[in-house]
Image 1 (spheres, rainbow, N blue to C red):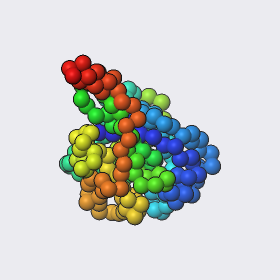
Image 2 (cartoon, helix red, strand yellow; image 1 turned 90 degrees about the vertical axis):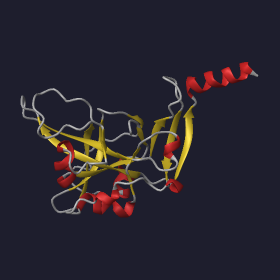
Image 3 (cartoon, rainbow, N blue to C red; image 1 turned 135 degrees about the horizontal axis):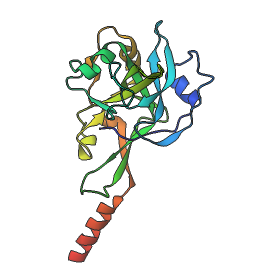
Image 4 (cartoon, helix red, strand yellow; image 1 turned 180 degrees about the vertical axis):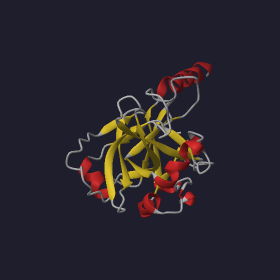
Length: 222
């Protein structure tokens, strides 16, 4: 699962990291965000018809092109890598609408109680933004005919670091894999695997009330 992430890099830094120079970049307004949540509009990187990388804002919460009605379907902000190439929800986008989702870190909560669990931040590499493997979709509102672009983040099994905190992790791509993910005709399913745990770090950013309660119970029993 990936339900929260951070983007502290500004528009220029993201454009440099992902070699974006397409049209519309100058007019794109993009503020850093320390707590990105589903249903908000966030930058994605996708390839245009000539194969060049472009950046645009899209809604985090996938709406398939075939969705009927003017109301949004239930929020689908993650797609499981297992079977993604066969699922009707994802198949079209996997073949023709793959994207990169820029991030500087992401968050997970270590489940030890029903609520008040500790929150951890996961960093990848150095100061350069990295990318989740994503899928995007274009949906046309049947009422007013406006087009909305949306995206989802693909998840996979956790690596040896993440498995201590959660049973899923987002698919993180290496910079050398960006072009393949965006432009390769044959779907690069081999890229949908856990990231190298040695290139990641985890830091507790909020101990949570459950941890405090457990520590108090332990202290009282001594």
